[in-house]
Image (cartoon, rainbow, N blue to C red; front, side):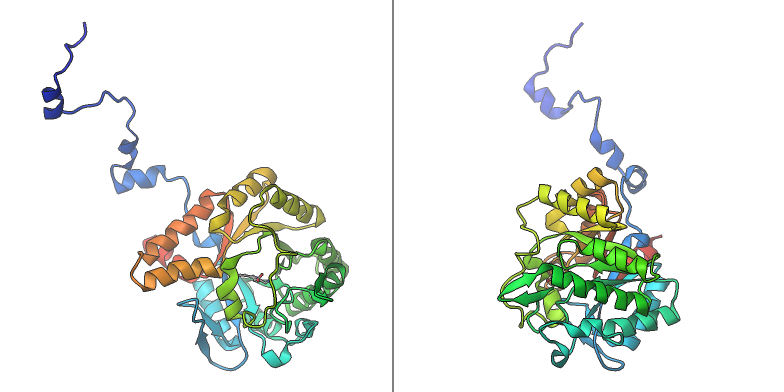
Length: 344
Ligand code: PBG
């Protein structure tokens, strides 16, 4: 027997769809949402990038990155302590090099007493159990702001790799745990791996910036390290074209074959599809860099009262986990870790 068709007036009085499945049931309360939650951000997922500058006891704000400072080495050690307290596993270091120390070759990169090496030694002395990652590329040290050596307006690949190998060894000697080449030269992972192994640094890991795109989102970082004004031209002959996806898989495949222990996709939010493809394809420890411009968008909009900064921060970070990332380099690391700690 079938019900007599309901008249429209009845339906309005007691509207009811004949649904067996209702997706909203699992969202009905906070406990139910927690129970079915698929991805969780923890402090273990975070790598905290920091900017080192010369001097003593000083923190200088980076104007285009509200809430981020350049730190003298003593202050880096204080933030390393904060990282340890917040259970953040790893710190990444980037130097602001005095303009007088920059030259065409980026020689300061090979100075065993440069800012990055000083910071590594200082952190490792006080907090040996925190991971320290060092970026390998020449741009913080070159007068032209490029990641490699230039001849007749062209970035030289193999000559640059030879210098990057020395830079990596310099950082490993200072006590760095993870070497992270961000230069996008061909063949640098293999060359660095071989040199590390030959020089007794077999335990030093390599996290390769494997799929790194030529991006407008690096702008505030270049302010922070002081290369924005000096950079001539762009980095499109070595960093990837943002329109490409298959090419990212080839880049990652090569870096894995050359010995990368971990791979990274950069930037983050506009490239979540690449994170997912890389993770699915290679099942490698896969990282993503939420870069300076992404941070600036969220922090800047929040500072203007245009978005809820904390919620946008957490939403963006769990988005990386959902896309398949095992970890995230983010300037939000201390804030996010504090929020996670307060809520646990
Ligand atoms: C240097 C380097 C860059 C970033 C990390 N390492 C800038 C660039 O390639 O120009 C960007 C990080 C950020 O924007 O937060 N090779």
